[in-house]
Every structure is written in structure tokens, then in C-alpha cells.
Length: 120
Image 1: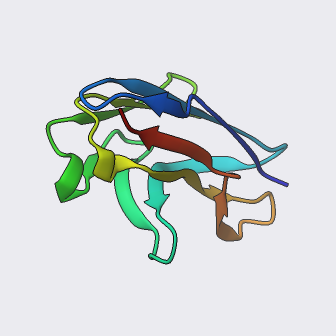
Image 2 (image 1 turned 180 degrees about the horizontal axis):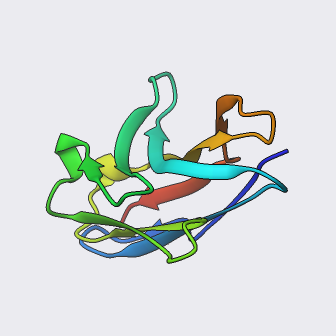
């Protein structure tokens, strides 16, 4: 099975920064695109940022110019540097990976989520 371990959430004041990380593991799995989504109570999950194995990056409109996604050389860990945080960025942030199983079946896997709270 695929395991995703997220870290880096917390409480920060408006204008501050946080860095999230997400590490993927799974025997025999190949990891392709990875990304971050966020969800507030009662809302659908929205895309924050994504990065493919080839390095193509995309951002949600609300975070462009403030957030930066990156990936390690092994392609199993992604990071989200969040700058100029605002109260509207408060949400649970989820990591997601598209992975190919040893059986060659594609599927998407979610992390457990990490809370980010922006408040003075």
C-alpha cells in the first residue's frame, strides 16, 4: 500500500510563512504527479499546487505568487512553501499522489491532512 506522511502545519500570524512536506512510500509503487489540496469545513477540496514527475507545475489562482511547490530528486517527497499567508488560507491541507501499483493499476492516494491556521 501507499503511505503519505505530511508535516509542517500549524498556527501562524497573517503575513507569515509555513513549509509543508509530504513523503510517499510504497513497495513496488511508482509515483507520478503529486500535489496539495486544501479543504475548509463544508467546502470541497480545492487544488493548491501540483507537480508532475517531469516537473510541470500548476497552482490554484488564489495562491499564485505566494506559494511554491517543489519535489526532491528521488521524486517521493514534495514541499509547499507558503509565504504571505492570510486568514483565508486557513484550511486542512492534504497531500495527494498518483501512483502505479506493481499490478500496473493507477490510483490516487491521500494523506491524512495537516491543519494550517492563519490568525493573529
